[in-house]
Amino acid sequence: MNLDEALGLISELPDFPEPGVVFRDLTPVFGDPKAFATVIDALAEAVGDVDQLAAVEARGFVLAAAVAYAKGVGVTLVRKAGKLPSVGGSVDYELEYGTATLELPADAIRPGERVAIVDDILATGGTVAATCSLLAEAGAEVRSVAVVLELASLGGRDLLGDVPLHVLKSV
Image 1: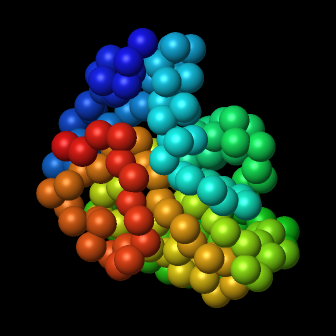
Image 2: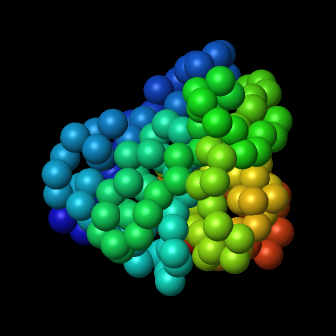
């Protein structure tokens, strides 16, 4: 299966989680073994040479874990507030439909570690920018961000500064 075919499985659900928002659902990609393998291979190539991946809750966990396995590197799970027993850092950020908090596990990142962020969708950029901030505060060198889908009209890439962004599909 080629990448365009795999990404063609992404479905659109209007008015979720609230009216006016179109939710892009990667569930059909995750459920198709050939599509999933194609997307993971493309993301693994995109992240480059790193020591570790940072995965953003929740769909980023699925993607980053598979990419980390494929690359032979570790993965740190960046969680929503209240999910970690030992928090190393916390940051509040804006979503396209509200606000949220992300937390980094204590001692998950070693200073100087080269890290790439993997997530499903880049929308307004708040989640990924918050993750970049958490990693930088922990002393990591954020080498890149890799996402399956970019919602280009929301301008999320503008929040990433000089961090290289790798997108499999932009809409």
